View 1 (cartoon, rainbow, N blue to C red):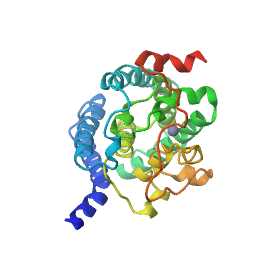
View 2 (view 1 turned 120 degrees about the vertical axis):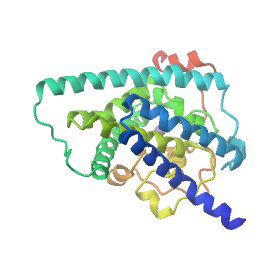
View 3 (view 1 turned 90 degrees about the vertical axis):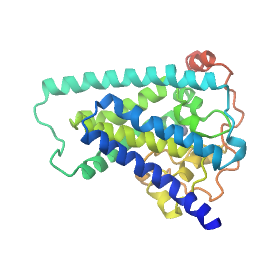
View 4 (view 1 turned 30 degrees about the vertical axis):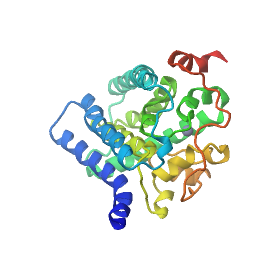
Length: 285
Ligand SMILES: [Zn+2]
C-alpha cells in the first residue's frame, strides 16, 4: 500500500502533463478550432485535479476555498476572462500588422513540432518571467498580482483567480515574442495550453512529489508552492512558471524545502472581501 501511495505521489504531476500533451496533439491532428483547445484540455484537467484534491490532499486544511465559490467563480468568469480576451484582441492586432507589413517569417516552421514548442516555451517564459517579477517588485503592479497570492489555502481554485490586468499583461507579454517572430497559431496554442496545464498542477492541493533535481529546470509544484510562501523572502523567488532558466540566469532561483512553506498567502493580508471590492482595489490607492 505504501509503495502504491509513493508511486501515485511521483506519478500525478507527470501524468497530468503527459495527458495535456497527448490531448493537445489529438486536437491538433483533428484540426479542432484553436479557440476550443484551452477549454477542451484544461477544463477536464481542472475538474480532475479538484476531484483528486478531495481524495489525496497535500494539506487537509487547504481543501476549503479562501472565499465563497461565487466570488472565486466571478473572478474567473468576469475578471480573468476580460483581461484574457483583451490581451488576445491586442495580440490579434499585432499579428494582423505583422502580416501586412512583414513578409518574411523568422519562425523555423520546418523544424520538428517538439523543437518548435520547446523554443516557443523558452521565448514565452523569458517575457513572462519579467512580467511576473516586475508585478512583485513594483508596488503599483503588485496591487494587481496581490489577488492571486491573497488567501492562505493554496488549491486548484487559485489557478483561476487572477486580476484581469495581471493575466492580461502576462498573456500579452508572454505571447508577444511568438507573434513578432510570426510563429504559427498552433505553436502559440501549444504554449498557452501547456502553461495552463502546468498552472493547474502547480496550484492544486494534490499530494505530489517530484525529484529535487528537477526543481532547477522546471516549475514543479514544490517550486511554485515556495513562491506562494507567506514568508516574503521565499515568495520573492522562483518567478518562472514553466522552466526555471530565467530564475537561474537572473539569480532569483531558490530550491524549495522538501516539506514546503510553513504557511502560504500574504503576511498581514488586507484584501477586502467581495468580488467588486477586490476588482477595483488596485485602481483606488
Ligand atoms: Zn507571484
